[in-house]
Amino acid sequence: MHEQQRQQTLDLLKSRQLDAALFSSMESIKWLTGFTPPLNTGLNPFAAGDALLWVEHGHFSLIVLDSQAEGASAFGTLAGCELITYAGYTIESPIRTHENLKAVLAGKIGVSGAARVGIEPDHLLHFVREAFPANATPVSMTGWLVPLRMIKTDEELAKLRHNFALVDEGQAVARRHCTAGTREIDVWAAVHSAISARAGAPLYLGNDCVVGYRSPNNIGGLPAANPIREDTALIVDLSTAWAGYWSDSCGTYYPQGPTPRQEKLHTFVQGALEYAISLVRPGAVSGEIDRRVRQFMADAGYPVYPHHTGHGVGVSSHEEPRIVPYNDIALQAGMVLMLEPGIYFPGETSVRLEDAVLVTSDGAEVLTHFSKGF
Image 1 (tube, rainbow, N blue to C red):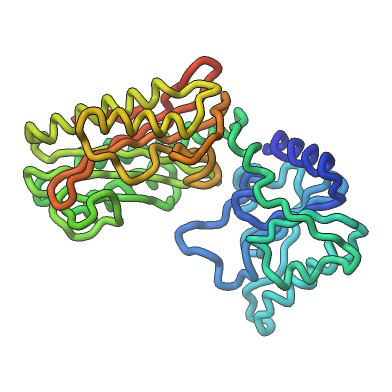
Image 2: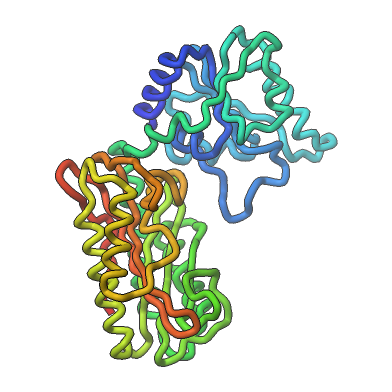
C-alpha cells in the first residue's frame, strides 16, 4: 500500500538531485506510509515529537515511538517500509525519550553519506536537524508534495469513500436527534457514538454544531448547552479521520420543519450547492468557481458567506485546491473537493450545506449521500 505515492516521491527526489530526504510533517508521512497517530489524545506525552520518515537509496524508514509500532501496521504502513522505534515509557530506567530518539537518528541519519538532503523545515525539530552529517546540505522541500497529494490514487479514494460513509451515518443521526429541547451537545454526543460504533473504534469528530440563534457568530463552533428551539435551525458540520484520511460534510436541520423563511433560504442554498457542483470539471479554475458561486448568492440578494466556497480533503481536513478568491489552481481529474455555500443571519438563523465531489474526466461525482433536504 502507498507504493504509488512512494514511487512518485522517489521520482521527484531524483529530479531535484537529492541524495536523501527527511519528511517530518504528518501530512507527508500519512500520505507516504499510512501511519496515523491517535488524534483524540494529541501527541503522546512520551514521544520526542511526531513521526519521522527517512528516505535514502530508494529505501523508506519510518521512525516512531515504540508504543506506536503496533498502530503503524494497522493500515499496511509496513509494506515496503522499514519500521524503526525508539524507547519511550519505561519503569526500568529514567525516561530519556529525546536522548533515545537522538541515538536512533545518529545510527540512521548520522552515518549517511548523503550530500544533499531534503527537509521540511517548518516541521523539523532543531535537535533532529543536528543529527545530519556535517557535510550534508539541507534543501527545503516545502510544498513539494502538495501537487502530488491533490490527485488521489484508487487506494486513497477507497479510504475516502469509506470515511464519507461514516459522516453520512453521522448526518442521518443528527437529523433524527434534532428535536426541540435537545441541546447542541446532545446531538453531537449521539453522532460521535454512532460513527464510532460503525467504525468499530473511537474516532475524532469535528467541526461544528450550532443553533441558528447563536450570536454574534452562528457560522460554526463546537457544541455547547444551547437548546434547540422549535423554530431554530441547527448547522451540523462533521469531519472524521479514519485510516489517515479525513472526511467532511454539512447539513442543516429543523426540529419541527423549517419556517417559511428558513425553507426559502434552505432551498436557495441547495440550489447554490448544485450550481457549485455543476462548475466542477477538469480545467476549471478554483478562484473562478469561487467567484461564480459568490456572484450567484449576491445576484439573489443574499449576504455572501465570509468563508471559502470549498477546499480539498485528504490526509488533512483542509488542503489544496482551496476554492477561494486568490487561487488559480486548475482542477484535474482525481481531485476530491468539499463545496459548502451558506447564508447566515447572526442571532436569527443560518443554513449551510456541503457535499464532497470527485473531479472526473468530464465533470464531478458526488461522494457524500446524506439527504440535504429539510
